[in-house]
Length: 424
Image (tube, rainbow, N blue to C red):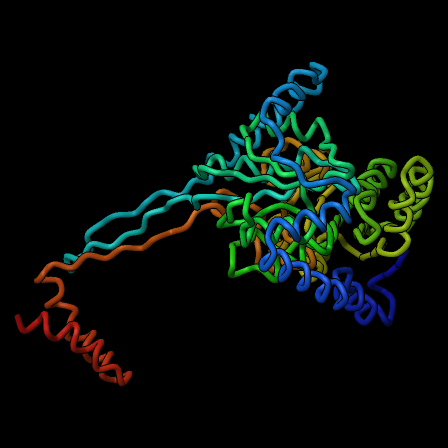
């Protein structure tokens, strides 16, 4: 676990190393994924069957029967079903407010201009099912697609020995997903992008996965749309000494338990408090899987600053996926920070609330991509088509300028297409 202090003479160098630390796929993964994609593209179901048998230990069968999903939902214990239903309600309500409005107007020159928003026809959803199964990811990916108006949702999920997690099936029933394939990894992403004999291709693929899934999405961007290239999870907690160290330790470990490459960082202005948090982390690691310890020891960090209000430039350099501002008044820092996937305000807003049912999407940019990217939204499942309409008078007003620009660019056919209309 890395310890830094802004008072250290080598702080800038060591902090830049933290910012630039690479925790994502290497060239071997890239090569392996390229081979998988090419084979699924060329061989279709035969390749998908082979990879599913090799990696998940079962024959790729027909899609999951929707009755199996409904049965899983009915079998849930009432408190768990109520929790899922509350999550669906809150996530839906938040995303419904993201729907964009069409624009259609006539400007001062009499030209009709505007834009129309339409959903993509089909979206592919990748739901992790290897190291763990996440019904929350299903909800976060499916609900904005539904709100956008996507007609076909095709879900893929890795299923060791062919068994789908019942809670994932129940979540699928709640949001109305009826096309679910027992396939995962880069090969499932390829099947969604290219299509096979049985799986029709989609227009957009969303959802988190391992390094092979992320690399497959990266390589297939352009064949299909993707939400983002997601890397290992990240959390950055800004906390003062008035916090309970056990709370902050649990927050840091909430991401460390995802994967050995996850990153957890604490920024504080109190050295004694930092030590109490580190001690609390050690106590809590005893109850968690070895994954959490491996993540903390390899990628955890504690950064000591003189004043938390001066930490904003550090936060922006890190551009974290999740940023907790666990202070009495988070507003000054909230206003100062520009780059973060999602921000959690105050001592009583643990990041885990956002993972499940806060409302905002938990599919967020990682690897410092919050500098230029946003979390998954309804807009990821929609496209904007602009339109333009000139009558004779309007064309007469703007046409000469268009001709002048076309001739200046050396494009005579462009100029002629306007000029001919002006002469008629």
